[in-house]
Length: 274
Image 1 (spheres, one colour):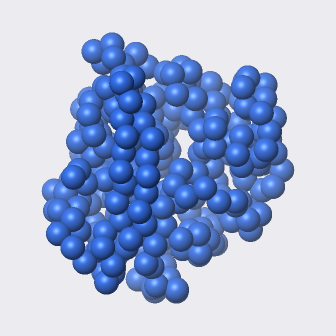
Image 2 (cartoon, one colour):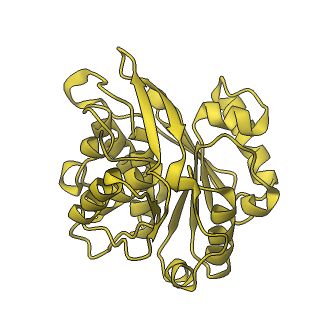
């Protein structure tokens, strides 16, 4: 068993990539009632995360069973467990933390009503909201889309969200514009070995090539997208231009796929400086 999960991966990546900058990453989850929860908690604390707003569930920890292929790609089966056992209402403490954040990074291994509530609070406070599309496959309401500063699908997720083909760059841009028409400001699409593409709120398209994988071989893609989006968010809150944010994210993601595991593979700031 290796500690992970999309939110935990992103939080640890953000903490490692922010180390030495004076910024502290916060992570909010529902811990399970088993030994796995204690292991995860230890890993989060060891990486310097603030987990004071986390809750405790009477359910076992959420788990992901990862089937790794010879080329490093994977298929994942998720058991929700405590990840889906959130209270019905957002606590006042969490709301205060959201309002005081530099940015909020969301993912879809938790209930949608939690993401919608957090996005609403952040948007009202002028806090950027970055939505990772990965996790449970379900539609987005227009209400939450209008609250998102960035939505971050891969090309397959973009196709599922829009019902449009994403086989070429032109098709990806058309599909991304459909999401903008529904209210999202910026669409950041990851393209695996082809890098990434950003359609911003001015209509400008920015491209970033993938970095060469250290060692020349993809070992395990688990957590690479999580690391990419966390790195992009870290760079964004530091005020870097969008092209630099994408470059930093590409560098971090390339390191992640060169190593085995999710949390163990996430790079430090020293490994991918600007």
